[in-house]
Image 1 (tube, rainbow, N blue to C red):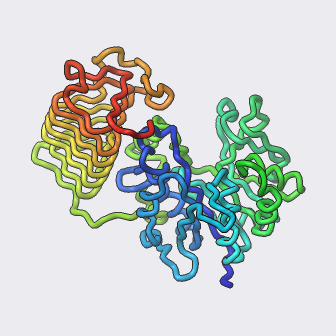
Image 2: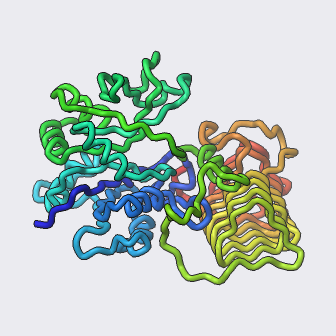
Image 3: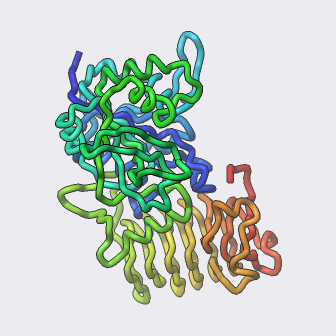
Length: 428
């Protein structure tokens, strides 16, 4: 048996339904972010930068894109003979097949995977946050405090504390109580969903609670450890951390990358973000092109104007087109003479020439979206993967478009603010 000091278990099976059409064909951790990256690249890069070389990635919902992206872990230097990265989907057992029903249930179903490394510590991570964290520093804190469970926490504004699991600590950072989304919070230390457990403590807690429906860390495992009087400590993190769980927060986090001095720097040499990427030619800028405050991926061809945008790899933007405050994902194509403002265009979408997206003059520009006003909001236009939009149409705000659309889908060549146009059988 090979012994590892600490292994990581990365929960990457979430659907991410609040990202709407972006997760209709892939798990949330596989969604592109920051041009050439995907969300899961951040915790994976944190692992390798922190010296954690054994990572189990637990997948469930729409895992194909994620599995293909991770492969055998070469971009993160996780292609090891012993350890490395292992994708762990639910599997058929003698007594039948069981989906992962909760965060801790997913870990419980992979006890055998963890046992083969006989670790001293197990690091539990979520695959859907954007941040840089040195897990080695958190482990040093865990050891120094004599903790059996350490929970990474982050101070949040008191008025937002009721949205989180909140830890109440003493002067030594020992957790004395915790509350799940409290109406009247007694602290502002929010759990980040990042835990370090002593392996024996985790194993015992998982087995003792195995029959709990929807076995979850916040609802079952942490309360159990607290009841058993295990030493629980809060590790306070003061860096950049972003939950990109909604379309608006996803758009905002991308836009923050292009600030003159960004809070979150993708290109620090000492803490690199690694990703799976194909060999592509450099970006090409046409004679009449213009780019300002934008990230533009390799292999993209820019013939128009790009301002305050995050552009993926292999994107084409036609001559005379103006794109502002937008996210254009890999291999999307935008024709000439277009205007896009505050638009998220998913991978391989094709937008015809002369098209206007995010045009506030079409109907009431604050009209809520008819499909799901809680998702498609804040003036965003969202164009699904492989969607086709014909030439010379105008589209308002708070709009969803998905599928192969045609001219006659746009009355008088327009799609008013708040409308949804979905031409295929997808989850929205």
